[in-house]
Image (tube, rainbow, N blue to C red; front, top):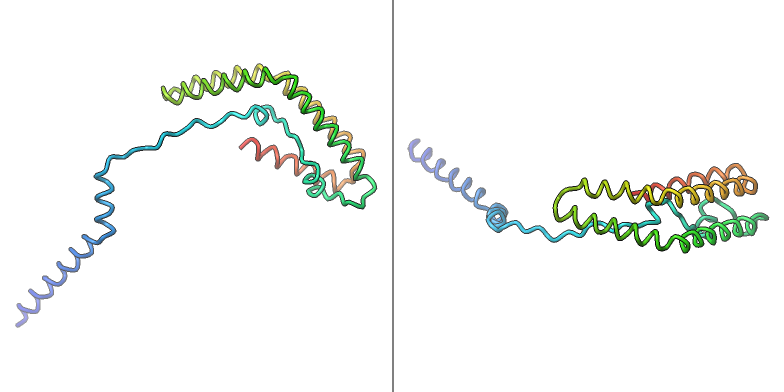
Length: 178
């Protein structure tokens, strides 16, 4: 009698273990592993020249909201005019250097394609250094314009508003660099 109970329990235990092992989840995983792995064709990331230089054209209404300049504030019109002038200057710099920007973008895209196909990323690094060197004068101009903007805003904004402006500006630069 004890032998029969022992024998039946072994059969039931082995049946449940086989059922668990052969569950639909494991069967699906086994068939997936047998299929050849195909990776989708990946495109190299696009190169944005304005992001690389650090050129930010600000949305005036959004900036006003972020730094806390109210619509009824006395200096709202002055701050709006400062940002309009700054955006106009940056668009002018962008227009003047359009050829340089398109040339740098085409160099970077060609290097990305070549390095993506050959899996040699040193080509991309060398091209990036070269393009960065060509953009250096434009970067200096943009930096000077931003420093001038900060000086003008410091004169008009309160300490609290200026602190919010600096924080917003650094967060925006972090987002653009990512």
